[in-house]
Length: 463
Image 1 (spheres, rainbow, N blue to C red):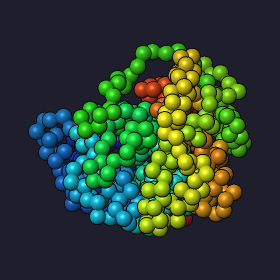
Image 2: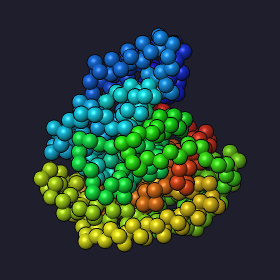
Image 3: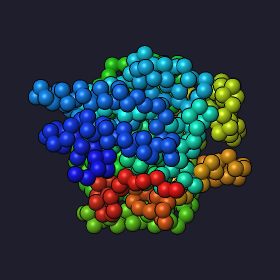
């Protein structure tokens, strides 16, 4: 049989359900893969093999009793180190939080476990989950398994690197400005930032931010197949009373014509030729699959939405964030805050929220006419690692290129990164966006793009 760690989550779950493979065998294979490749990439920063085997044994026992183990029964998955997992530190990449031991699980953990998933380990992120690069002073640097000279992305860089290297079949990440979509892009896998309110989340180990849902990072999955993204979304999105902003929206919405708006250069992004070529190629794949693709010159406002999202993210409580970053002493976090000070401080929350209503209406009107928007994930191919710390010009270059990622969350819209191939050994992909709670439309288009190219597969880390 093919090495188990190479298989999709759907394939592993099917084998375990039919008793052709045990959950313990799948867990053993996943742990062996972690041991083999994690020292090269530092994607997983905390794991307990005995606990992993105990989880797997419980799945096997349930199947032995004739019980339904769930859609992810026995599937090894990783979770990001910024959400609560009972008995583990919720570090969020900080030395300051090395002793923030969770006494209970975040709803994401509970919902994954209820679906039968086996939590394999906890993945790395930059300090405070601030950056599109993954390094910190407590867990160290994560390297991209495709090419160690480029960023694995951030802030869910450990998640992207893990799933690309075959450490787990699905990875959990969080996204406030591209933190799922960019690691998926940089590591050559797929990643979904769901609609705000789709997936319940709550961390008891850390104090909540004062304006709650206005800037909250949304949890979502990364995986090597769109089918696995679909399964993971269903598992993660179950109800949990602890999140008052969770919305009981159906996973499948009303049928819409298969009409796509394709924008190669949204709101002055000015992408590099390789990025434009990837978007155009994805459009052709959709056309071959029966979608109507209409190229548009521009989208509703992205730049203003990105500027306001940055204010919501970093402007509220800016001085307190800066003081904590100075105590932590993390160079990347300090570069992020100091580099954005003029943009976000001082900050008028009421003005930003009022403008958000207007922009969101404009975007929702756009999606009355199109099922999905196809556009770049980033204006550039994945960056050289640590580019944002090189100099002021490089910092500005990074933030400009990430415009399509930063803007989408401001309106609470879902965004899906679909990996489409490689430029040399550097990954490239596209972003699909749709109306609120229409992840199903993003996934349908994503499956068509995926089917028209070479599927993403687990790889051995490059030297």
